[in-house]
Image 1 (cartoon, rainbow, N blue to C red):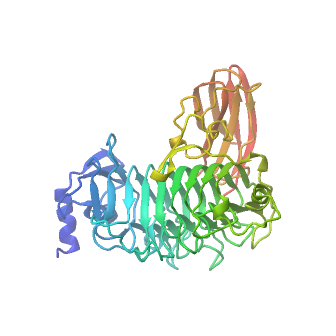
Image 2 (cartoon, rainbow, N blue to C red):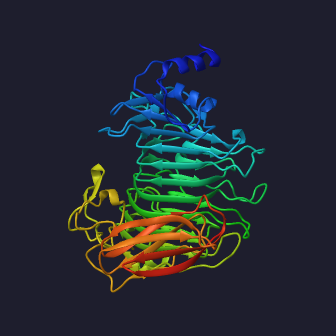
Image 3 (cartoon, rainbow, N blue to C red):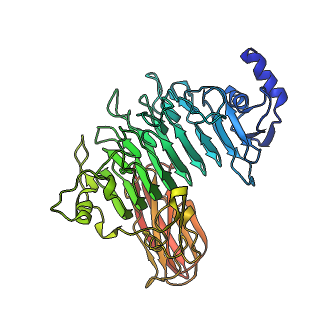
Length: 501
């Protein structure tokens, strides 16, 4: 076997390394490349620190890339598919591995960002057999006891597919296997999954729970955003707490993680989609929960906690078979409305409970094209169109193909020009700003600090009449009072919001 030093210099010689600009280094990798120029070798180079902001680009259309050894990510790293590929490249285990990627915060000297874009991650070997993920996850953030808690990694995942995560490689009996996990008392900055799919795992899909009250005041992450994602046959083991489970710390004086779950399609999966402890500022909206897996029953579908949290605009269909025994003396639908959606006080720290918007909890067939074969396209007559908070469709919008139902609803113009209060408020670090136009207008929506300086321009374009919303990510600005202002057709409205970090 080559020594690490020999391999490292061989990597330098073999890889075609293309500098994109002064702060980014591109490494194109072909599927089936030799041992010195494969994905594993590219990760070794990225973690060496020899180049800044490494981008590993998988260039083979539909290529299968084998990861032969897991490694801890130490520097800013992007792994992405080359733009324009007809089929996503796939990363699979080459040899038995404990996980695909890990961030060990005790090894970091500064905050980093891991980005994954346009890739399939499959836990099966090339012959179809399952890899035993002994660390219980595909991607993990872990922290040693001596880690600096001011160093927070960010994890940004876009347009990726995750499948087949089982610790013991035994789907029928496995109890653990998560696609993303913050474990061993790790913490993170922003964690974001957009336009992703998740299928076939034994435990929570996204889990962050070991940050609770151990050796100091901290929480599992600053923010979690899961948007336009699909869960199909996910979380099918016997110990699932919720497909997405986040447990914040037990000190009421520290900011909670800001959590936004928006436009999710959940099918044949564990019934409880979200479960949080001690987390303020949790928004759950625009979901379709259909035909949950009946192996492990649960009467709860969404359980969150505390002030500035909300539950609204959710369709639950064919869920009764996945629920524990419902008394014969009660109406099933009424029982679901009264028991399956909950905004409670903080489990350990008290706080203010809330009330779900039960008027926007629906019970209709979403009319998927072919759910049994993984096609959740909403058919043209689906009642899910137009039912979302912003007037678009419920569920993962990647399946909403009806041309008459778009993200910004143009069919029902509001009565006038309006700007809503941002939500949540206070927030950390993301908040949603909604506005309405009664006619097509050129819109400028800007954020200002207390001195009147422009912090960011969120919108500067022509917008159709209708209801619109935009999310502001304030990760890179300080806590404080900010103002947001909309201008359109000679009119303006300004409102105040508070960022608490």
